[in-house]
Length: 342
Image (cartoon, rainbow, N blue to C red; front, side, top):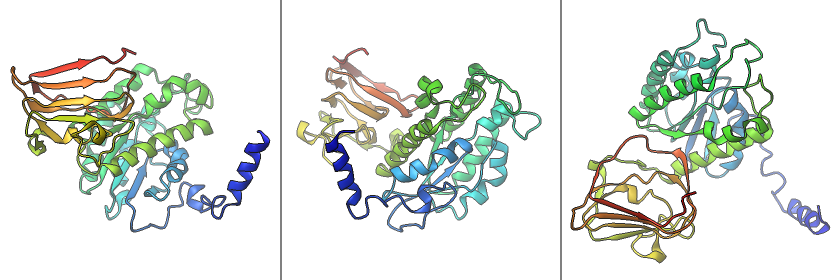
């Protein structure tokens, strides 16, 4: 560390409140839930030891943005979720519920026999049904990857193919129930050996837990910032007047803008996904960048006045966190792009 950086750090630490901004116990102990700030939304995390390990990172990332609670203890396998979900949600006063079941169903800890994908999916269906008795937005986290070898405690080996079978079963349930997806599997899988605690261990080191925690916090924040339905059905969308150009700029835009001029561009796809597009409408993504949502358009153009979508040249990163896993039918859509293929 340079002398300048050292003295800057000392200066920051001397600022009132800087050093102790995370001194409260909930930022260090996952099972110590915060005293709610009534002005902030309430978030509930449900999951196994993977979620226990990232809970404090989520709380730190969402400090002053949300009251982040988690269930006390390990939520274990999906059948346990069916038995305990009503107790976990309590009075149901939640704005967001972020949940996962999977590892225990894969490996069969404290179960005989192990769950099948069909049994797992049936349990998830029951759990989501209970969640739907609340007004909470639901986010399902895909299960992080299995370990490379047989798990050290019960000596069960889970292949990538078997893990995918369970994952596909879960995604089908979430699709049918309109639950958002936080793809934690894809978030950590490319560098799993960098973050793994060992070939026989399903857990992650501190850096891996922080990576997952930041990802979870990002998705929760996204839902909080966009409280409406991210992908409403056609009948619930606002009808565009037609012959209108909507601008999106992931760098300089704001979803508080009108979107009708380049200097008043939206930042995300959230606003345009609320529209039922009409003949002559045009979507202009005027700058490359990162998007956390799918561009899920619906509408009705004509052969003479199609709906057009154009992406400016450059690199685009589309994350699957809120990927829409169904199909919208759009008539007369003209798509053009000069974006780089990579």
